[in-house]
Image (cartoon, rainbow, N blue to C red; front, side, top):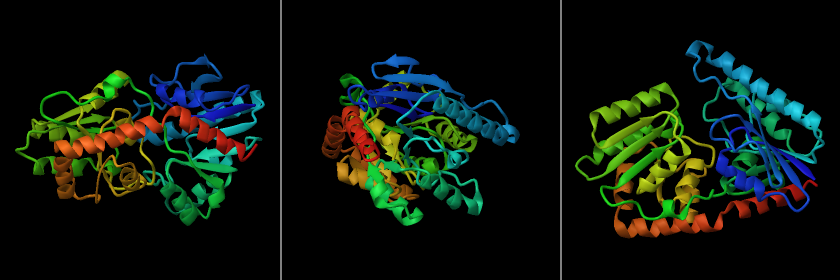
Length: 362
């Protein structure tokens, strides 16, 4: 059997997940965006990586942004159609959904959708948003989500059959053991990492840092995204020497170094209908977390015993949780939880669970 993994934003380390999914005699074509962090092209055991999806143009101004993105989305859909025509796939798996193009997909084989964001981070279609998402979800023969709470949301908000929705936790992708040990000596470092979007709660973290003034703790904000969020990060760093803003693309080596230097990772999101890759990167490096009660974050952290959960938009609670989690006994307990998740949620286990989803359709 041959499967298509349409996985535009796959990172190099996610190749291990693909490699652990097919059984003997099966293969996967993994179609990704041609960008620096993507898996290398070519054949890797039973997986062939095709880097033929265009990346977005990040240099266009705000006035041309919408047209540029629309063109890129349809170019990706066209590349996917060409791959489907050129191969006889037994199953097609879309790991990322584009609601602007995927409500029209007709793959000619059983279709699996990974629903990372039950609702988009930013609605762009007004009242039509729900209808377009519903149409897209209804295209699939099976759905994959990363947590039970997301399955519940798909059933309650979109009327999907619970039996069509399968929970496959995100894999904790492997990093060298040396990067998952205790943080270095010195003042503890609180890491805020990833795409800078308005729903990430950056301004809440900046206020929490102000409330922790006088404590021997450092903060690093690393990533890129919304210009207004980047401006918040730069202004915070300019006014507080404990805060460092690293705005821009973060290489894989730099990401590993940041997590290894961090004592804890914070996800103070204000809204979220997803599971978090940042959370699982923290687990990969054995780092405990402070998260808010949104999406799958709060329930995941409670179930995994990996950190503390606070209300969203509450800088005081966030500051208290950061202070509490940096206490040696609590840090050690929650870090052990992160290490335990790292050990059991491997790409091999996630690949096995994903292949079992395919069995329900084949």
